[in-house]
Each structure stands twice: as C-alpha cells, then as structure tokens.
Image (tube, rainbow, N blue to C red; front, side, top):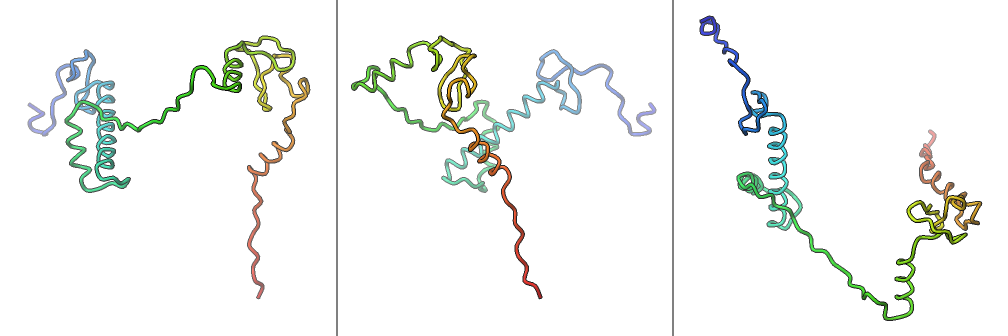
Length: 175
C-alpha cells in the first residue's frame, strides 16, 4: 500500500533464476541473466560486430568502415553461426627423400638424437642452445667452456646503443 503512494516498486519476492535456465540466479543489472550467461552474450555481440565489419570490408574491398556496416551488423547479430575470415595459405612441398646429397644430409641430422656440440653427449630435452647456434650439455653451456665464436661484447654495445639513443638539442640562433 505504501508503495503505491510513493511510486516505488516492491522488491521481488524471491531470487530470480537466469532466463537461460542454467540454474543460477540472475539480476536486473545483467538483464535477468547470471554473470556467465551475460558475459557469453556480450562476447557473442562483440564477435558479431567484428564479423560484420570484416564482411563489410571484404564486400567493399576496403579497410575503412562504411555506411553499410550497421545493416550487416544487424543481419549478423541474428545469425548464430560465427563468420571467420579465411586467408589463403601457401604450402611449400618438399620431397621426403632428398634428390641430392644436401637434402639427405639435412634429414639425417634432424632424425638423430640431440647431442652436445663439444663432447657429443646426448642431451635430449635438457640441452642448452647458445647464441652461436649450437646445442650444448650442462657442462659446456657457458661460452668460455665451448670456445663460443659469438661476440657478446659487441652485441651488448649494440643493445645499449639501441636502447639509449643520443638526444641533442637544436642549436638556437643567438640574437
């Protein structure tokens, strides 16, 4: 009775179940859905918008948005099937057995077990790749233990120079 006078609505008599019948409780803030169903619905809407924009771009042949995009978005929102753009891929075919001596040698190296480049010990999954490009065991993993040809000093200088560029102010004309 008091609610009619003040214009307020009465609180719901009990908890509201999710409108998707998932068994959880929904709320008015999430359109009477549980939080999971609400997130899924928002995700589907975003995917539909992305699909619509990609369809519009493919149809128009441009990368900019156009006036037809909202129409396509409305059409894609009603469809439950997600549209995924497919890009053609080029596949290079290599023969199983090399036609020359270099092809068979490369395949032979890949098939064998991984071994240390210094002591020829089997390393398996515990091998260490060095910057020089070779694989080493735990004993020979450090550059001083396997006479590494990689120049760490020059690489470090280049990294520091790249990270800290020289900044010079422009010279001003004195009056």
